Image (cartoon, rainbow, N blue to C red; front, side, top):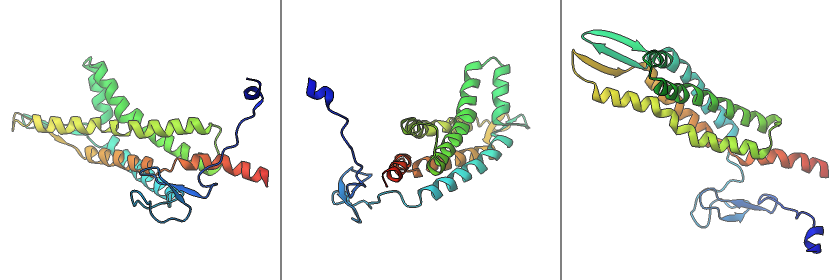
Length: 217
């Protein structure tokens, strides 16, 4: 017990410091400089090539598409020849007015809160990699994992539009068709998911190793 109590923390090194590369597909370790994994034959990289450039490119494309997704109508409803248009926010407000509070909250969360939160989190992660962050590396990893997990749920609006379009087709009496915002919103979600997938989380830990390396030199 005394030996265990007096023993200090063990020094750890990363795979890159040990001259090894970890395969992102199967986790096999290979010597630094190996072109492909010996097990699954996937291309090996110590860090994803051009990760920052690809993240910012997909992120910017997602932001650009998200703007018209909120300005243009999501649904085009035709009732007895009269066409009405509804945006995401306008539809949520109407749901509130009709007393459908739960559905309105789901629409707001899935179509406004989650997409904006993803944009903010991805930007925070990238700026933290470039300039450092007051958030701990563990906290940033949690934000990254949450962003990847909830990304697909932003498609709820698109699924609802697709279902309504398929079900409500009664000719002159009533019909529902997707508006231009549906395409823009779907593209925004896809681009944001690609931005999150292009981010290399190992860069978060690199920001901790660099100050330590400078302190030891």
